[in-house]
Length: 139
Image (cartoon, rainbow, N blue to C red; front, side):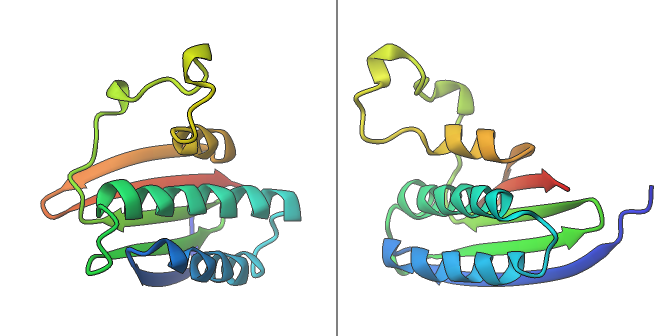
């Protein structure tokens, strides 16, 4: 199967939670050029928002002098989102299970669960100088 890239969009924001609205607007604009139904578009925006929140808070430690970069690439078969921060990453196996009854009253800790439910594939890349969350949603 030929997997041609249709378009590529990039956004860099400061590590400030106030920038989330800019991310949402960016994603809405990019997704308006796709054939995804509105409910799927909303799922993608929520997954992106959660990933960016994590990059700001955990990756860059809310340090507004650090940037978070977002890349959205549409291919014939799927949409790929990449969120990059300057953090060291984390060990997925060390996170508390948000579905555990003992964790239900916690105010935080469900972002990755949302991402996993809204996207078809996710993976984490740790390179020298950055950490990246890659998410894929198939058409």
